[in-house]
Image (cartoon, rainbow, N blue to C red; front, side, top):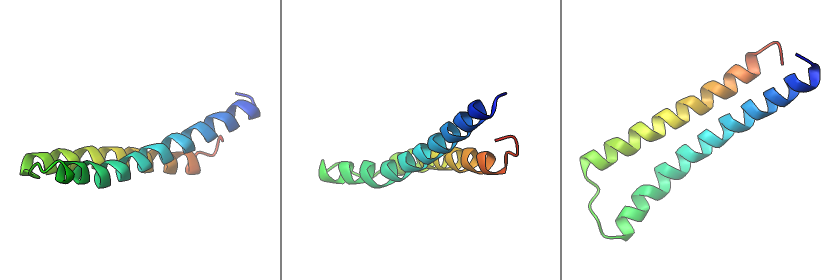
Length: 74
């Protein structure tokens, strides 16, 4: 793979990781807030779904970024 292609892949991986981390934060903050403002209850099932989605998004974002930092080919 050429150096330019490696650099592009490295940049895309870092941006994807950052995007997934930001999505996790936005979901964690605004989804419950929207539910509260609509005067709907925060049920245990709702909170559990939010925690799972945030954990997956945050974990994937961190994993992608760490892999892009430790990848010696990039």
